[in-house]
Amino acid sequence: MKKKKSKTHNYSRHRSILSDTLAYETPLTFSNRYFYRFLRNNNIDLITSNDKNSHQTIIFNGKGDAILETVIRVLFQVENSLALKEIKFTNYSNCLHTINNLLAFNSLTSFLLTLNGLLELRITNRRSFLKLLSSIDGLKGEAEYISKSQKRIYKGDDLKFSVEKVISLILQRYCDVTIDLKKLTIKCSANHPLLPNFLGYEIIKENILKLNEKKLRRTSFNYKISHKDNDYRELSIPHPKTQTEIINFYEEYKELIIYYCGVSPYSIRKPDSIANFIFFNDRFHLEHKGDKYDNVEESGKGI
Image 1 (cartoon, rainbow, N blue to C red):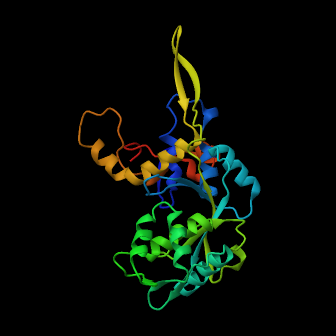
Image 2: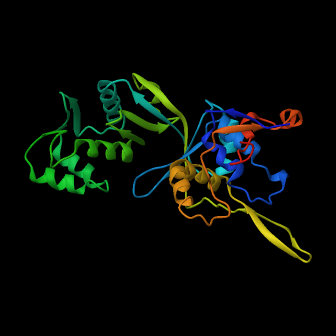
């Protein structure tokens, strides 16, 4: 029976682990089919920050699912990490109200934030505020600037002093939250004492787990297959975290991969195009093909 070609637009970004992660000789018992479904159904993504430390986090769906969180912790070897929530505020006033609640809760009373068109910082106790800034890495320059200045009010548009930077680092150091004032978002632990009091917010990312790179062990699973009469070839199955990094790599560089692999005509095997179709062979294939997202397209066949 001739293959039937069906156009599809709902390929998951996780599909690369179905065909591009495991070695060709990997036994069928080691298929990534169910790992693919697990990643896709729970919308699991590995996010790498753009800062100099390149922190990584795992983001997934599943509100209040302790079992799912436990499985993810085991798979990705997450240790000593709290589940986080990312919150988006509906307006600047709600965000400012939350910041002042956090500061008051942590007895940070040597300054006050106000909003008069621009974010303003009003120093109420210069000595205590300078001591606070000096205790945080990255704010020593701001502390020196204030110590030489006689001003008590610093606006958000001051070229020599960044109110946004000061507030962000203070909140991160003393309030255990990470805030982005440009996007009006804040990240905090799921059991943060002030989470129920945040006003006017929308939870946009329900579960975030930080990865501890120093303690994370990414040992691959090694096995041997017959190669010659009296010889074996050793193959490996990558660690789950490595496979999720491969997913991100393909997603970011898929067009460049196809371009550079097409420059030379001497490649025996090379990527030809980004998958656009699912192929159906016959009745037996349709009855035993499994999930509809598990199919792999082969370029140039059946067209």
